[in-house]
Amino acid sequence: MTPEVKEKIDNLVQENKIMVFMKGNKLMPQCGFSNNVVQILNTLGVPFETVDVLSDQDIRQGIKEYSNWPTIPQVYINGEFVGGSDILITLYQSGELQQKVEVALAS
Ligand SMILES: N[C@@H](CCC(=O)N[C@@H](CS)C(=O)NCC(=O)O)C(=O)O
Ligand code: FES
Image 1: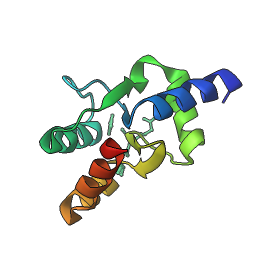
Image 2: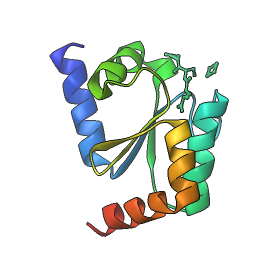
Image 3: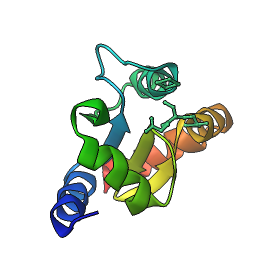
Image 4: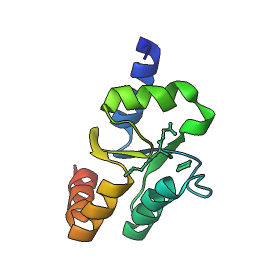
């Protein structure tokens, strides 16, 4: 990943309390895994930003290196990598995601 791509990702995860790297966008997810994440965050009713990695190959590859995580989607909360679809589902079901989000939005 170039320094420019790293800086772009740094800015995205620092400027948005909940940042989602996904395929497609909120209104039209282009993959079921990305759709899972969007549906969970919509259900929680929290504000979140998204980046469509299908329209930015540098970010698509860069975010995997940045997070040391091989797949999309990737969710960041308060600048911290939380996980992909499976992890979000688990955290949502246990109530931990609500907690994390509340802490992040209050900070
Ligand atoms: N088990 C993963 C599923 C995500 C996944 O397998 N993503 C694949 C297919 S969308 C991926 O990102 N492949 C690499 C790529 O498309 O760049 C999760 O929990 O997020
Ligand atoms: S785009 Fe095929 S599984 Fe995500």
